[in-house]
Image (cartoon, rainbow, N blue to C red; front, side):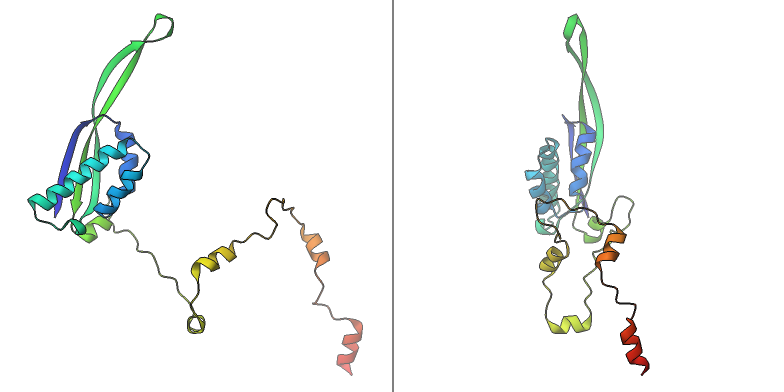
Length: 189
């Protein structure tokens, strides 16, 4: 079941509010409210209020469990633009557009609807890490340590790594493919 809450004539632009709403769509309501609380955008406060209101509507009016609610989507529409003017330099008048927007938050207790995106297609689930059976039997792998060692730089910190040409690499590496004359003679005897 979807429950809605609306906030009209919010004094923020619709474009700025949409940037905030895309971050919280599909999240649990408690997680979304926490993310919005610490988000450094001014529109996050208005989005926080409308999501909190939608969760309160679901809990009070429809007796839904607040811990099971998810943010299905938050729609942002442009409101009227209040046009004002102020004094500019050299006795000019500068027009100021004070934009407004309308926010509409939908919360749901249906887990599938919360995972789906705007087009109605379910978002892909993360695939688990597959480990070969021989490695899994040996001992558990510390994934964080493995990831850190895989990205460990070869040069010392603060030094500048110089590119080495293929010719120099070939000159430095010992040639193991050709057999020496003495070892070839020993094999034939």
